[in-house]
Length: 356
Image (cartoon, rainbow, N blue to C red):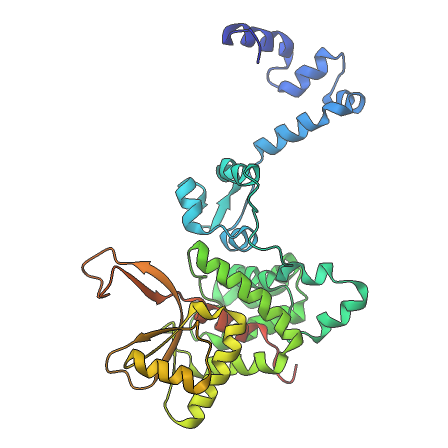
C-alpha cells in the first residue's frame, strides 16, 4: 500500500518498536504515542481499538468439538478435512478454527449463510422463547430441551473411564449447564439403551446427513411439545424394532404389523422428509402395492431385497460405486445413511420415563 520496499518497511518497523521488540507491536505503538502501556493509547485513541481486537482475533487458537461445529455450521468432517488436514484432531475430536479461518471468511464474504438453517435451532429454542411462552418448555417430553448440550454431555462422559463416570457426572453436567437430576436421567437412559460401554452413537458423516439430522432434531423438539403422544409412539416402535447390527428396521406382513408400519412411516415423514426414506421388500412392485394400500407418501423411495420376507425401512443417501467389490448393480445407488439409527437411539435417551 506504500512506495516503501520490504527492507525500508522493516527499518521503519524496527525504529518504531525501538526497545519494545520483545514486548510486541502494541507496546511499540504506545511508545511512539508517548504512553507507557497500550491501555493508555487505546483509551485516548479509541477509534483504533478495532485494530487491537482484529489482531487478537487473528491470533486466537480457538477449537470446539466436531459435533458442535457440525451442528452449528452444517459443515461436516469431510469438508473440514478437505480444507486443511490439520484442522481436525481425530484423537480429541476437536476442530481448530484458526485452520479453517480462510474457508469461513470466504463463506461470509460470498454472502452464503454460514449456518444451516434460518429456523430457531433446538439449542436456542428456550433462550429465545418469550416469557409468556415459558410453559411450552415445561410441556416438552424431553428430559432436557437443549439437545446439543445433551449430546456434548454424553460425548464427554463417554470419554471418561466407565468406573469414574458416575462420580464425575455432576462436574460434567455443570460444565454443560444441565441440572444434575436431568443429567442423571439422561445418563441412566443412555446406559439402558446401550449394553456396552457406549452412551451414544457416532453421528453420521457427510454434510447432507448432518443437514437431515439437524432438521430432524429441530422438528423432534417441536413435536415433543405439539405431538408428544405420537412422538412417544414413534420412539417406542423404533425401540422395539431396531437392531444395532443394522441401520434399518423391519416389519412383518400381518395386519397388526402393517398398521404399526403405517403409524411409524406417517410420523417418520414428519421428522425426516419423505424423499430420504426407502422401503424395500422382495420386489419393487410389492413396495408399490404396500404404499398404495397404506397411503404412504409417494416421495418415499422404493427398493428390492432378494428373498426378503417382510418390509424393511431405512433413511438413505445417494452413493457412487467406486469399486468392483461393491455389489451394487448400478453406478449410483441408495445406501443406508445411519441417520435413522442415530436419531432413534438419541430420542430414546431424550424422552422422559412415564413416571418422570
